[in-house]
Picture 1: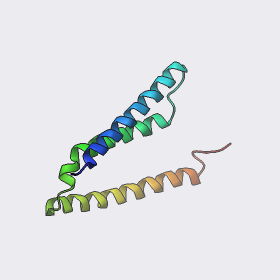
Picture 2: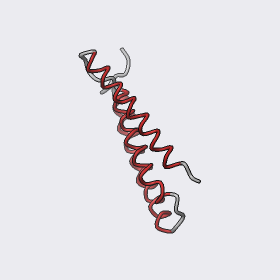
Picture 3: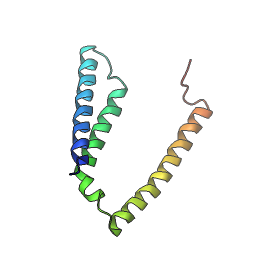
Picture 4: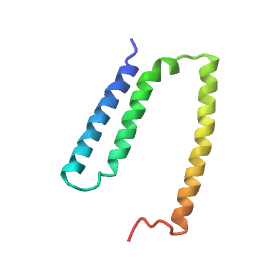
Amino acid sequence: MDYSARAFFVLGTLFGLMGAFFITVGILASGALPLQTYTVLSLAVLAYSMSYLYPQFKQKDERMKLIRQKGMFYSFFAMMFYFIVILSILQFNTLVLHK
């Protein structure tokens, strides 16, 4: 029996609870939300999505191979674009990370 879909659902629930905790802490502190809130909530959405899509992704047919190949292709160029933009911003001191 394959438990991966359930594992993704459990992880999504745990990340969702952590995100709710961070939101509660941010509201009770009367300040901005902690920055890790957005990362944890995006991981929760990703885990729920993987839980929903897992039965299709475990199939080994040609359609899924093509979808994976296109996903890797576009992800590679998107990551290269983000790296170039972020590193350029840091190199030209548009955004300073330290004092």
